Amino acid sequence: MRLEVELKFPVLDFGPVVAQLAGLGAEISPPQEEVDRYYAHPARNFAQTDEALRIRQKGGKCFLTYKGPKLDPNTKTRQEIDLPLPPGPDTLAAWDTLLQALGFQPVAEVQKLRQKAFLTWQEDRVEISLDEVANLGYFVELELVTDQAGLELARSALFALANQLGLSQSERRSYLELLLEKRLAQEKHTRP
Image 1 (cartoon, rainbow, N blue to C red):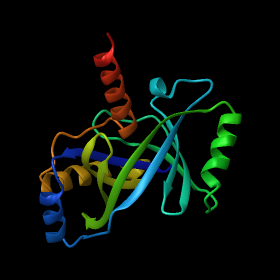
Image 2: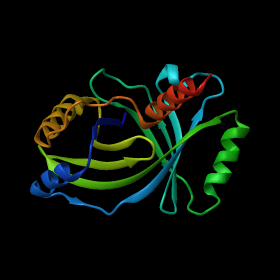
Image 3: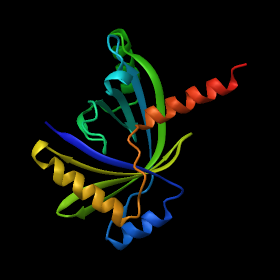
């Protein structure tokens, strides 16, 4: 089973992290817009089961992704199934129609500008994302993909890299969870 091991950190700005990454030899890509549309399952509550289903648009491409429940209390380690969808402007609308016909309902969209960097760290190729998330702020994600046998080494490598980059206060909640919590707090605040 393919496991995504991820640590995410809120930051005030990317400057210090970019400087550290450059010093370690990483090159950072230009920002690219990503829009993730998340769906609610018709028969179970993904918020309770800690799962997610989304369609991601980036550039002219779309991807359908399922994320399983988080597997530990310290990282965002979970099964991820990521399937490319046919390119083209009508893909999102067609898949949205299909999912809704099957009973899935759109929950929210997460919009972000993402810059990616790759760094070889402790013999692993770590994917680093610098995310400016609409209505949430700035985040740095460190990610490795592994299997069950490599799980502990991957976790250890990511924590060591986070320490090297001066990152602390890991955030386990997804952008969707953070956005929905913020929306709920705003609704409570505006009620008479």
